Length: 194
Image (spheres, rainbow, N blue to C red):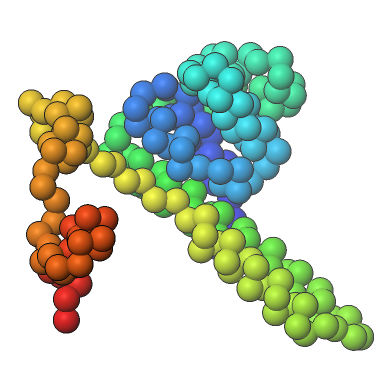
């Protein structure tokens, strides 16, 4: 299995630089581990820094000529000529593919380090198991998911939805008869009674 797909990494960076809502979702779904070499990792850090400082996404042409990036990184990025369309439908596939390569690299490094440790005269099995558990945890905890949440309807603004929630009577309750409790909690919620 391949551990890297540098064209996919560059495609993802170029996708993010489109500055569309879909590219903003992609930027939020990625981290440095999704990029396998210093050039693409450095470009990703620069995009993220630019977005946090100026609240906008740097364009591809600005990124490839940014003096904050190393000359080698700029030339590697400039060499990627493939056109990229920032299409919302492409997001899950890009994230899933980058995650697959990220996991493969982490697992490969874990196995390589484990084999080196096992080749030594004396090993600390507990430390080796602990290190493997940390890598597995890292793989699971940073898996990216893209989720969109829409509140209300096309005709409804967010303010109207919030007003409706605030003005609703709330969940049905059964009064307890204990004034202090009922004043604070309105009573027992029907779903919590056994």
